[in-house]
Image (cartoon, rainbow, N blue to C red; front, side):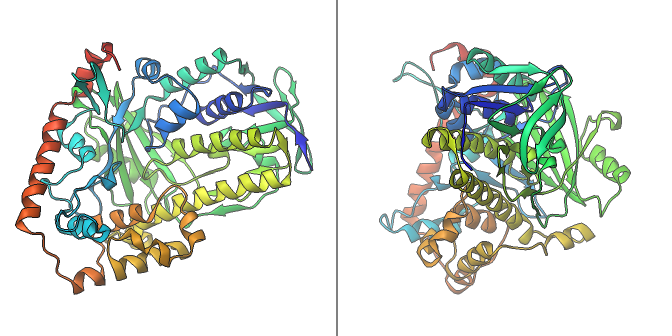
Amino acid sequence: MSDQIDEVVIVGGGDSGLLTALSIDRMNLEIDVSVVDDFDRAVPQVGKSTFLAIQQVLHDSLGIDEREFVSTVKPVWKASVYFRDWCGNEPFHYPFDLGGNFPNPDEPDSLQGFYYFYETLHNSPDHRTKCEEMVAQGKSPWYFSPRDGGTRRYDNVAYHLDTERFNAFLRTRCRERGVSLVDDEVVTVDAAGDRIKRLRGRSRAYEADLYVDASGFSRVIKGEQSDGFREFDLPLDAALNARSAIDLSEVVPATVIDTGDHGWFWQIDTFDNRDRGYVYASDYVSEEDARAEFVEHCEGIAAEDVAKYDFTSGYYERAWVENCVAIGNAEGFVEPLQSTGLTANAKAAVTLANLLAGRGRVADDALRESYNSWVSRGWESIYDFISLHYAYADGDTAFWEAAQSIDLSDRMELLVGAFDRHGFDTTVDPVMERTEVEDLLFFRPRNFFALARSMGATSAFYEANDFEVSEESERRAAEYYGNIREQVGDHYDHREFYHGALGQQF
């Protein structure tokens, strides 16, 4: 069945719904876009962490002016995921400039030489990438460039976002661009099989050519359709969350991860607050004991200020069925390790809008199948990456013993085997089926190898070969990384940026 899309109604005014509205409106000027939600309801207070692609989505795809965004939303810049304590490993970073390590100058044309060097010197405090150094020094990516006559930014960063300011900003952009924000609550869905006929709110009814369910876990529309839900083999299903005020001088420009007895803790610093959470598995600990563990871990958090959220890791196998697309938590969710949620949903919104534009707003089975395939590969890619954290985990509680045995996909088995045979070497791509590599979507073999190595994964390749770095290589490396430390030392911290540098040209 083909549908000419002239009108879209989005249910849900959270971040995913508003980003979808902005995406469709920007790339399809002929479509009339409305968002229906109870806009008087409080915005959830969980701090939002993102990954690198959020910059491209917001400032390129959606055309949001960076200066206006920074001035209004006041983000904190995130340079890495910092595993301060992961199952007893030494602290390590998963930085956004993973490829920024200094290559072995003895073999300037050898890609493998880079990975010899990485293996020999990785995790040394004397050999940090610029992102890792920003975290170590507590710096933002902004610095003053006399040559450019103003403030400039190191590009390989993401955002920590205050949800209230971010959501308010997106609402304002929607209104400015002609997206209709309707203050109502959908209470009834009229459907004929899987096809949506109309939505009934408390105030009125809504009819459209395409309905978008962005209602979160309530799944107002998607719950009325018959579709298979693929549940991931992840035992975590609950999260505790609380906030405390901080000063900008205390900001840690990374998402900080610590291990708990039955899951893991996060710390996300925003402009005003330190957002903390505990993601845990309710099969292995009671809510009461999880709360006690959380409060003990987080200095300054009172038990009465802790909120609880429940979730299921998995996704609907068809995001787009008939004339309804589910997006955000309404479509699926993977536990929040590595902060994939908001950015992946934003990319899904842009992908949907681009597909509609590319097909002249004609939605047929081929278009739906194309979008559904992209979404499925995205979820599977995220699950693959998250599953690796547990495959190389350690711990003696019942939870951690169970976590180490979660299912790995065939793609992960290929990568684990490749790492064992070749070490940290992305030239293994050609020995894998191309479709397998493409299915990773959001992540590449380099991402997996770096994470596995940081977590202490062993490789027969390294056990059989003893690589050395020459004195000249060490001298040049010391100079290279010394320059990075000096450069980052000249960056503004977040207090300096917001209370002075923001007013300069950038």
